Image (cartoon, rainbow over all chains, first blue to last red; front, side, top):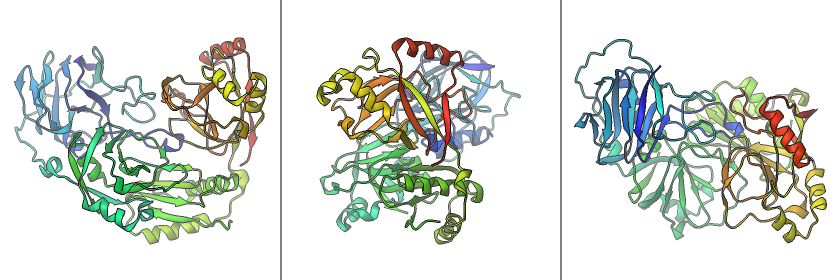
Length: 283
Length: 243
């Protein structure tokens, strides 16, 4: 097996594929890439299957040493990628040789970047998925010294130098697309309007979810029995705090579910940072 | 088959939420599990079905085009006849050690509740607990049936690392931490049984509708079972039961 060695981990990097399906009734989170738009693009550039596992890197990338030749593609947030200290392009195939070092610099746009390798990462496969999750996989983020298994490249790739065009809106938009959630209609008319007429500031950001600043105007006394939640569910706490659940969220929750983001909405949200502001727009 | 009034709602465009009246009851649980069973046999467009106290969520493989059409299909399936014996559930006998060395919050719990340790053990292990659903953590059972005498509000300061196997009480519920996790429940015992084992094809032996009976074991027996579990030599005692 070929591999990539972690010289220095980044802020939070994890191996992810499209998620862990079929175990929801056992309380197993879905997991998977937060920005499926960017990860699918990275796999597509390498002609990988969409299910191939990629490395998701948030805010500050890791330093990685390639033990073998392979081909890579980087998409998503611009974390100033460099190969052997020289800046490299994103959204394109890059040939990498054994001994090459991939590192990252300053965050220039977005929040999460994706590294795809030829044929995908072949790290531990648990319950039908490569996706890291604490308590399910042995590792939940990259650690110094870890070896990430990859497949030996079968043939040397022809580089076509073609950049794939990306949708800039995906990174710059403040608009997040959502459906009304199951408890939307329990809010007052004023609160329903408030949700779509105001900008909200992001306070916390993780793979589990984003927290949005508390808004007194959205406080309520709705009580409900614990029920299902999923990535993209927007919960509203009694004090008026919105919680936007992401891919590592629990399978159940007890707060009213006022909105449900579309997959496009989740992907756009995944590129937002703490203190940025967003609008919700009804789909 | 039932006169319960169901509500079907879209949950985004790739999931459907079905709700029963907001009550925690075994008859609703039974109706939910029967419906789930029928869906697994007669509905094709799903990759996951999860249930909770009064709800069932179908996660669709592809987005629905016409919600009303889907509702009609689901209502037809709901009204199919089923023999309740088709659904197998079990009563699981779970060893718990209530020794204070393994139960960091037992002393403070007993003090607040003004109970002797033996009284507490009897109260906690006498009832048959119903597994309503699994959630919160992988494999974590939401159990109904904790005696009123043992209800106690969660801790105001959660523990950052509760070890798997810890048996806790939080509010009106008791449960087992299935993996290491932060949590706000009072830890009053520990079980040597693995409730979530990723090396198994079905990582959790429990499922919604099962029942749990705790029985008290000494620290010595706890250690012995722990060893046997590690060597895969321990077989849990179970009995067939129907919801």
